Length: 159
Image (cartoon, rainbow, N blue to C red):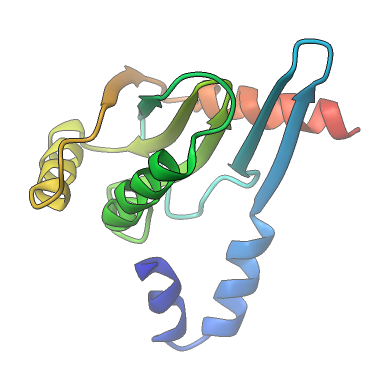
């Protein structure tokens, strides 16, 4: 991932890496009676780079059927995510804060300060890729309620 390389190419890289890793959690969610399972990769600390202007939540959703994605779909989803690495942060206009996989869909949650720029970069980064079955939705969320609700739900679950 490019963000990983960026961490090691500047002064203070070890501290930056430690802070970045401490900001994320991977949570397994299971509802045994319903037979549902999901994995959530969640940023539990709001990024320092996410200034007040990051007021738009961008949700990318890839539906694939039930359960976890089959191996071939998972490989395509990983290629999709790697292609969008430049949107994940350290760019001044967008930040990835959550990835949820399971119950028939993989969803990425970004925040951005500029909808048009986010979509222009999204399209540029994917221009040489196959067309992915991803739905994009954007909503005004200046208080980061979508992200905050996920963090709060996880905190209640593990408390």
